[in-house]
Image 1 (tube, rainbow, N blue to C red):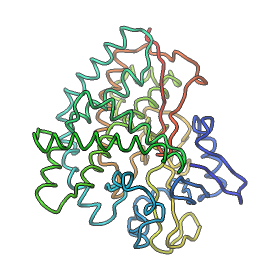
Image 2: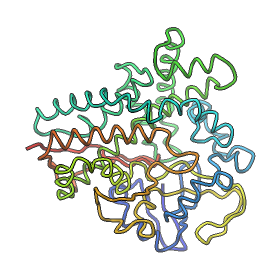
Image 3: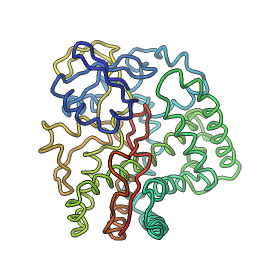
Image 4: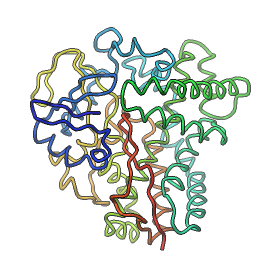
Length: 410
C-alpha cells in the first residue's frame, strides 16, 4: 500500500522496509492530519484510508453502506477482477469478498468448527505441541522464535483441523508466502507459476479427501459440496485456501509481534511472569499494540454517505486501517503504552461486524496457551540482536509480522 495524498503533501510506500518496520508515527500523523487519507492499493487503485477508531468501526460494522465486493456496491465486477487470470480469480471466491446471503452461507459452513466449545477441545493438543517445540528450542540456547515456535504451532493446529498432511504443510506455507509477497500488479505475472503450483497442491489434497474422507473440516466441506447447491468447487478450493492461510498467519504474527513487545518492555514481561492470570489480558494487548493485520479487504461504498466528515459517493473505496485505529487516543488511554493489564480493551485487530474473523477464538486460545508456556519455560528470554537488525515480511496483504525473531534463553 502507498499512502499518497498530494493535498496533504504525503507520499509513503509501505513496500519500503523502513516505513513498514514502524508505521505508528505515520499513523499518528495521519489521524491528526485528516480522518480520511488518499492511498493507492495494488489492483484496487485509489482508496480512502480510514485512520480513526470511530470511522474504522463504522465501516466494518455497516454492511449495508460498505460492501466487501465491488459487485455488491455497483452490481458488477471491478475492472481488475475481470482482467485477472481465471487461475488467480479462483482463489478469491471466499467469504472475505462476499456480501449478504452469500457471505452468511459460506461463513455458516465453517462457523461451527470454530466455536469456543469446539476450540477448547484442542487445549491438550495445543499445549503438547507448544511444550514440544519449546523443549527443542531451549536446548539450543539461541534460536529464531518465529521458525522454532511462532510459525509451526499454529500451522500444525490448523493443518490438523483441515487434514493437511505433514509433508504438505511447508510447501503450502512457502507458496502462500510467495503469493502474498506481491507488491505490485506486475509482480503477479511472475507469480503465475506459483499459483499453478498452489492450485495443483490443493486439487491433489481435495482429490485425496474425496476418495478417502477423514475426520477433518476439509472432508466435511467436500461432503457439503457433493450434497447439492451449498458450495461450488471453486468456493471449496478458495475456502480451504483461506482457512489454511488465515488460520495460522494471524497467530504467527500475534506470537511474534507480541513476544517482541514483551522483550522491549521487560517490566511487562516480569509482570506477566509474576502473575500468569494476566495472560488473557496480555493477549488482547498484544493484538492491539502491534496488530497482526493492519488492514483487511477493501470496502466499497454502496450509497452516498459521510465518513469522518467527508462525503463519499457510491463506488468510492475505503480501507479501514486497523493498526491505526488500535492506537487512537480517542478510543484508548495512553495508546502508545504497552500494558498487559489493560482493561477494557476494545481493539479491532480481528475486525468487527459480520466479517469479524471467524477464527478469532482459535487464535486467542492458541495465543494464551503459547504465551503461558513461553513465560513459564523461558523466564529469562532476551533478544539476541538489536532492534535495528529485525526484518519485517513485506507484502500487500495487510499482514504485518517478523521474518525472524532471534532470541536467547538464560
